[in-house]
Image 1 (cartoon, rainbow, N blue to C red):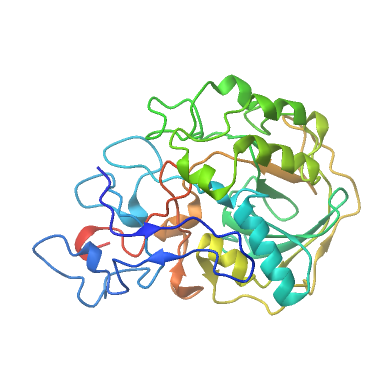
Image 2 (cartoon, rainbow, N blue to C red; image 1 turned 90 degrees about the vertical axis):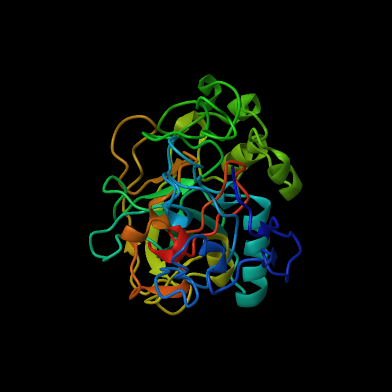
Length: 348
């Protein structure tokens, strides 16, 4: 049973307001984690992410583990999932883009996804990159919240509506939709394992909402529209083809995007134009599946807890206090999970 200590309101769509509003029950002293006889949470000296935005308390893989240790697959306790309003074109993402345009003057589109680099101690987790492609009318500023050796250097794997689950799928097909997977129905309409649906017309066959669909409806999102939007904005192409990345370089993470993910690097560069971007000189040659993905803007959506949500993948030196970990969601894809600590009594 989920033990709720805070109600997290879905993102507002009104430009100029905070993207998230929270009714605080747990506080920066991690009081919600003081569950047992040890009562080590009075100072939070053992909490890794003290001061993080609160959320619901999930029960993790055993009687102690919770918070950022909630498991990504079925087992004992509640699962943690990726958040659906991270998806390219969600109402929250579009509101964040508008806020950023109003504050900075830059017109870009936001996204999150997977990027890997051996040149960074955290393998790119928390970094933001500005990307120019041959098919989008404006640049993208995207944050890497996942990492992988198969997505490195000159490729970015963007979370879009049904972009392909890859090896680890908790979007659909689990034994208990709304608990061990997010969406109802059959995998058959979700397209390729790597790449998702190949054509815009295929989006209409998808379920519109998760099994626990009220938060997504309240936010003004639906999976069919998110899928169609990714085609309309040129981040994926008919027939499953990928756009070509013309340039990619690290930039400062916009506050509006960090609000969505809750991870922030302490070593961010200054400014939203990369100083030394990588420049591509040839076309992406792949559609999904097959071939290589060099200089390709690829895509994914597996609904799974991301690697940036695990303590072992970040550190205190390179992250900002209270924003050391990506904040994940429950099975509805919108309700945030409290990740200040990993265990009751703050032992993790």
